Structure formats: structure tokens, C-alpha cells
Amino acid sequence: MHATSHDLSPVLLELGLIVLGLAVLGRLAKRWSMSSIPLYLIAGLAFGHGGFAPLDLSRSFVELGAEIGVLLLLFMLGLEYTGDELSESLRDGIKAGVIDFVLNFAAGFAAGLLLGWNLLAAVLLGGVTWVSSSGVIARVLAELQRFSYPETPTVLSVLVIEDIAVALYLPLVLVLLVGGDAERVTVSVSIAVAAVVAVLFLAIRYGHSLSSFVAHQSDEVVLLTMFGIVLLVASIAQRFQVSSAIAAFLVGIALSGPTAEQSRRLLAPLRDLFAATFFFFFGLEIEPGSLVPVLKLAALLAAASAVTKILTGYWATRGLGTDRRGRLRAGLALIPRGEFSIVIAGIGGTIEPDLGALSAAYVLILAVVGPLLMKLLAQPEESSLITSDELRKSDDTDSLRAVSRSS
Image (cartoon, rainbow, N blue to C red; front, side):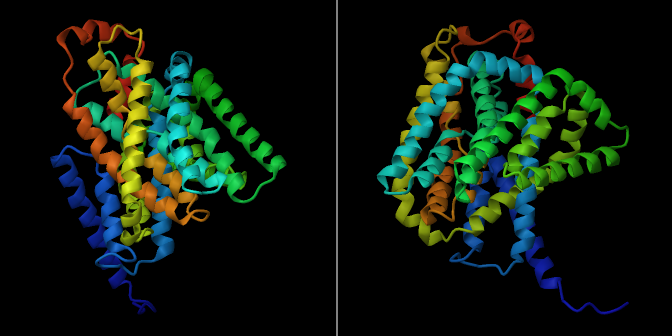
């Protein structure tokens, strides 16, 4: 045995302690019936620069793990939507999606302008306040057993439209960040639109054929194939200035049926591992001291955007025969922010230093407060529940089951 030139034991020790620490936080989150995202962010703050025990980790290693984490997170989210569910959501929820964008993007955008930030930084903050956390919301809906509630299909439609709309929003922002002119912006957005339309078309018309092509009896083959495809498509997307995260999301949408089920089962552990790394890494990048000056502003922004989300849900569920309590539940369900808000803040930290700290504090607040508010108004009136027979007849049954699986 030849002696290695570098002693890796300190790095392995730190990584082992970090992963075990994240596991403990995950257990606590489950016990407290809350999202684990805030705890992972807090852990990153504690062990990053300015924390109580800064770690000397390999930046490239942790950053790569975080990047894989967000790719798998969004790929798995895409797996929850079939082509039929997407077409149904786009047809029935487009008006609600427009109202959602107008109200919630405006909250962050206006705040950015009032802070004296440049136009692009304000647009990024608008994105942070606009997009709800599908992962957090799906988990809480499952824990509260709310898939039979009459307002839940509308909540899911809003989430689907947000996820698809971000596929157009992020490429535009990425081009603007690198100083692209009008021609580059047009080309990038055109590519993004073409990619989204093409994937949606393939998912709706040929999703089963694509899934059959990828399918294999061996778990090993499917795992390696799907993981490789996600990484390959993400790298190609970045070459064309398209968000790699959204590319992974679209790959997930293109799969359906047994292959999607198998991929979900095989990749879920990897997603959980690397997603925890992603949120932890984001926390590492922010000095805890930088949160103090923006904490009051984050609380005000969280309160304002919580109100706009409640208005969104209340308006979207009108005419469904839902009582006021149900319409309020729909609005409260949309409050939590998480993965997309962190992604958006992460890509814009170079143009506005306060964006990362403000976004971290903002997500921490709403990822905790949102689920708590959902639980306070968890129980519906008996007359507002959908019966099991009605649920089976509902066009949204498959979508409800799919989101249930994501939790």
C-alpha cells in the first residue's frame, strides 16, 4: 500500500459529522411536524463564516454536492406531474396563476425598488416572494391529510403553473446577470420557451413512449441511466444559458408511469442527501451577522407576501362551492417558500450582497410560519369535505396522489 500524499481523515471527519448532524435535524423536523429546510439553513449559518464553529471544508466538493442536490430536487418534483395533469392544470388554473404572479411578484419587486436596489435585483427579489415551495406544501398537505379537501386541487394547479413559469423566468434572469443585450435575451428566452413547449408536448403526447425507452427491470440500470440523463441535460442547458435546475425539472415531467415510480423510489434517497447539502451550503455562504440588519425587513416582507398569497388562494377558489374557511385554507397553504426562492437568491448574490441574507431570513420565517398557520386552520367543516366516491371521480385524483408521494 502506497501512502497517500494528503491526509483525508480531517475532511472525512467533518463531512461525517455534518451528515449525522443533518440527520439529527431531520429527525427533529419530523418530530415537530415541520419542514427540515429551516433547520438545514440554520445549521449552515452556524458552521459558515461568522458562525460559532466555522468549518474548513473543500468549497468545490460542497458546492458540487449542493448543485447535484438542487438538480435532483427539481427532477423529483417534475416526476410528480404527468402530461395529463399538466394540461389540466394549465387549462383550469391559468387565471389563478396570473393573479398569483401579479400579487406576489409585485410584493418583492416593489420592496427591492424601495430599498434602492437596481432593476435586476428587484426582479430577483420579486421571484423570491413569488414562488411557493411545492416540496414543503406537499409534505404538510400529506401530514394534515388534506388531499380530500375541495380547495386542494386549486392549490396544486397554482403550484404547477408556478413551477412551469419559473422555467421561463430563470433563463431570462441568467442572461441579464451576465450583461446580455437584447439579442441575447431574446435568444435565451426563445430557447427556454421552445424547450418548455417541446417537453410539455412530448410529455403529453409521447410520455409513455419515452418512459418505455428508459425502463429496465434492473434498478441499477434505471438509477444510473436517470442520474446520468439529469446531469447530461443540465450541462447542455447551462451551455445554452438555460437554468440547469429547470432542465432537470423538465426531464422529470417527460417521464411517467412505472418508470417515473421506479425513478422516484431509487432517486429519493439521493435527492434527500444532496438537497440537505444544498440548503446547508446556502447557509454556509451567509454570515449570521448579516441577518440581523435585514431581519425586520424580512419579517415585514414575509407578512406582506403572506397576505398576497392568502388573497391569491382566496380568489382562486371562488366559485368552487368552498366556504370561507376553505378559501382561507387555500391561501394559507401557498405561504411557505423554499427551494426556488433559495435558488433565485443564490444566482443573484453577486449583484446585490443583501439579497442572500434577506432571502435566507425570509425563507426561514415563512418555511416555519406557513406550515404552522396551515395547521391552525387544518380542519374543515363537515359539509365541505369531498367524499371518497367523489374523490375517485375527480379529474385531479391522480395529481393529488402524485403530490402525496412527493412527501
